[in-house]
Image 1 (cartoon, helix red, strand yellow):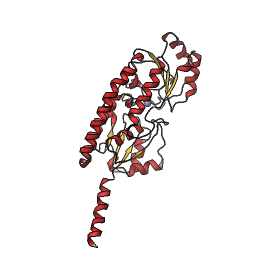
Image 2 (cartoon, protein in one colour):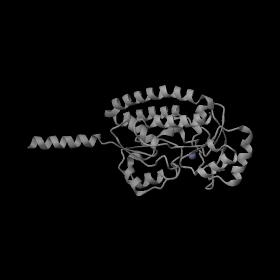
Image 3 (spheres, helix red, strand yellow):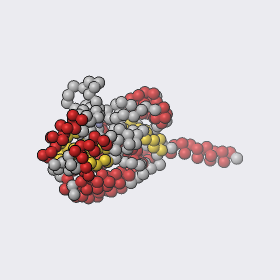
Image 4 (cartoon, protein in one colour):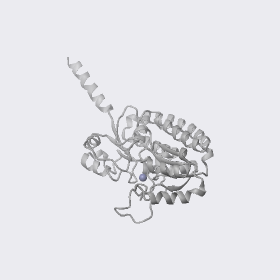
Length: 298
Ligand SMILES: [Zn+2]
């Protein structure tokens, strides 16, 4: 009887030790966490249909952060409008800034385009520390993957061999895909593109596209008719390859501009991040983005 009870107790302790709960601010980091540590229970604060600058600090998110052993977010102020409040209300010491169990992707890559002007409450979603939408560059994505694997291995040392093994496989898959994607998108190099927000800023840099105009007059501020007319005048001579916006943006201004410029078929709406969190979702997302963008150049 006692042996049985002891066995049950030991099983319970083992189960408890294995149940790692991870909170991810964005779907791309949830997907990456599942690649590296598939056994972890991962909760995601946002979806590909939401603007990660703006979500509501719902009670369910506070509860999820309260129960997390580890959190992975982008940082660089992407979540400035909601994460600090969640961290405060969750009251979980593990997910406070400065803790090894609070991981920020932006601290592990070089960011571009820091906002240079004076920042006021009316400035919009400016990127004072540089563009935080860094996951759209697969090379930066891999830098984050390596840093996250390193961190997970150090805070959960018994998981390190597994995490390292998963990182090795992911790195090999991404490296072989990287060359294929660059080849597929070669016709886009040097072409002009009209965008909305800096959502795909790192993608343009990687593929050599030239963003010539932003539908937003100021970061995070919706397009206005006057601003769109200005873009139209400016872009006529540059023959942009297309107008590319994210799924969480309102498609109407882009559609109006595309048809006014006589290129209605060149308006492309892309998911700004992975659309599910299955292990192959990261590669599938890049596959989709590259295929749809490359089609614009045809
Ligand atoms: Zn932004």
